[in-house]
Length: 410
Image 1 (tube, rainbow, N blue to C red):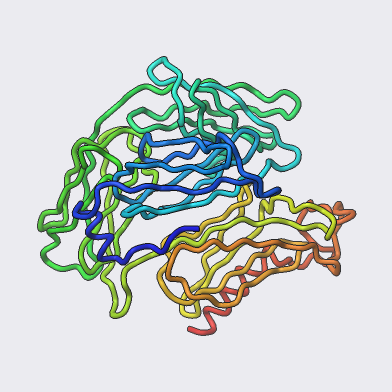
Image 2 (spheres, helix red, strand yellow; image 1 turned 90 degrees about the vertical axis):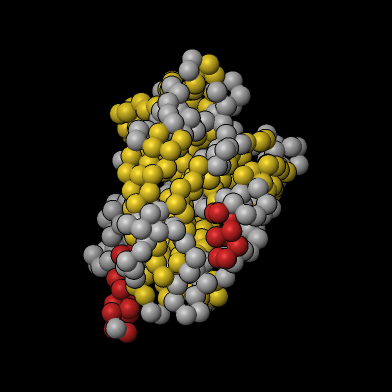
């Protein structure tokens, strides 16, 4: 579990570089279906080259991480990778991973990665269907990789690493009977320049003094805005970087996995903290599973709609991906409530809870015994996602009802 995030004032100190310069991330990697530890899983601090493997007990520790906020990715052979949103590493922190086995009717796509012609390790790889990441992997020390849990279809394959131009292999057909092999070659590039504006929502005349920093670089890459809010940031490495803008008494703005391939312009908006708000934001994430009956093992809850809401704001909605996970980032401290819904399954809602740190919330949806399955859905097999009465199921109704509830309150 993530430790409580430090106060916003400490985060500001981190961004300006006046706290401890390095931290350690540690944790345990286990299988979600058996709870057994996973040996030789790879854990990468995204936006850096820092990575380690778990020992035979599934334990890992990554020392000497430059203070900052990063995404973390974990992968192991034969299992689905798991990636976090922003994790605060202004001080030592911990995060455990539960890796799920791939779903039925999927295959693993294998291949190799090279960096300037040589095999390279801990390269982040993705199989993408449009903007949806279907599978993620990290390459081994010999450059080989395995993207697990990919259904039949056509995908774009992508490899990313700090200091290198993104490599892609678009439009690759995946056949369950004969999965392809993919080779991805990265070439070194950069550094580049980022420039832009940091805007303040209360629009003061003097916008100088906001700090922009790329986390994970050594020496540190940072800049301060001038009166117009403009900044220029030199020495930014190519690849996926973690970059943030901050200012005292404002909520900081973080861009995670921002892809740098050339000199670019990127703008930030900082919002003034209201009375009692600390400016901290948090992440709620978790896994979703289906339980067909008491004797069956849970299966990956792909396609489930997860919602999170407050009384005074409209709901935020996420659809569970192929790896069975969801994430909501940028959530303010306060009282929240959540729900998960899928046609043909019993909708699950949580009790209201207080959010003051990153939170893990897992859902298990059981099959609804009273649901009337429509044509082509014999024995409760999901197909057209319609009932015999052609009425929308919970998958459609949850966001509609939540939106109606919010509008009625306003």
